[in-house]
Image 1 (spheres, rainbow, N blue to C red):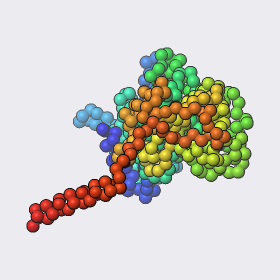
Image 2 (spheres, one colour):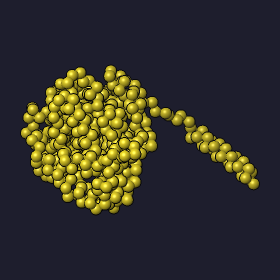
Image 3 (cartoon, rainbow, N blue to C red):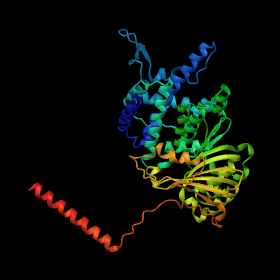
Amino acid sequence: MKYENTFKAIDQILWKEQGCGSELDYLEQKSWMLFLKYLDDLETEREEEAELDGKNYRRLVSGFYRWSQWAAPKKCDPQTGKMVLDTVNAMSGDDLVEFVDQKLFPYLKDFQNTATQTDSLEYKIGEIFGELHNKIRSGFNMREIINMIDELHFQSAEDKHEMTVLYESNIQRMGNAGRNGGEYYTPRPLIRSIIRVVDPKIGETVYDPACGSAGFLCEAFLYMKEKIKSVKDHETLQRDTFYGKEKKGLPYIIATMNMIFHGVSAPNITHGNTLAMNLSQIQESDRKNVILANPPFGGNERGEVLQNFEIRTSETAYMFMQHFIKMLKAGGRAGIVIKNTFLSNGDASAIRKMLLENCNLHTILDLPSGVFTGAGVKTVVLFFTKGEPTQKIWYYQVDKHFTKTQPLTEADMQEFLSLQKTQAESEHSWTLDVSTLDDSCDLSVKNPNKVEAVDERTPSEIAETILALGQENQTLINEIMEMVK
């Protein structure tokens, strides 16, 4: 609760700032301060561990640029003996804003130049502060926020968990607030269900080439972390497992910080346009074991980008589908969220044929339109394994209405997860034999098992029912009128 109350109080302060007009701005500004406090706690923890082992630890952020120096200098309270904020030396007002803009951010941005490896935490810090901008113009507002964040601590597992849950909640609010609802946030119950079906294992590589805020990668890390059995397993998850790419600057930064907050110290997330990669240049060493993604749809790409694909299309989601197929290793597995029109649109028929011939599309999960708040589109999840053609497809239809106040939950996915193991038939699930398809490879969701309620009344019987209801309503109205006289 302490994190939730702090986050709400910070948002109220940011609301006063002219440069912060949206949930997106609130998250961006909270993020850089939370990150520096988190980093200071992390480095203190590493310093103490090194000292116990009789080793030295070199801090990445040193001197006056440490959070405990510029943001929250402390002194001993002579009455209580506790360390409290040194209000004399703690900057505020214009001095604080000037220090952050002209000294702190340039210092941290320069880590890109001083880091010896691009896959190090040091380099990631440089990338983050090369992209982020301080939009808080009032040093007094900034001081208030810093004081609140300094009260938070990220050294226990419980504290870290609570903070990551709240951070995810903020990302969800940012997605729900508008722009492109699914761009930043895919509902976590859906992501967890996809991961359970795909079942990534330690030693496999997990890739999201349109990672947004890194929801798939963070949840995959939490899922795989439970399988750690050795120090080597831990190091494998930290360094050689998760790979992501994001085109847009702010989502890329949020993704990087989100993974660090979840426990991956130097995420292998790069900033760039996945679709700019020519498919013919992909090598076996580039391929991954598992792909989890919710690629953007619509969009516009430059003409030269379209040339990178065997099947030419202007729809970004269809370009991504070709990328997924090409990037999977033989035997590799994927769980992909995509607009349901992919199953039937004529301009996607060649890509559907490519998918069915090169991969075993074993499962299609059909979702109602309310799953993605604010997006207003129906989506499906495609589960496939590369290396053998599709013979049969098992469909499952989530038959429930979701809203912003009644979102998708873990319980809503339980029947799907249970039936998917054996691909059993039910009122909501069925199997399609691919040999029955024509050249269009139309994979539209058509549930043959759903029992439709049929009204067998004659027209005169329906009319009599309507008349009787009208008479009942009139009687009730007369009774109410008598009561109020």
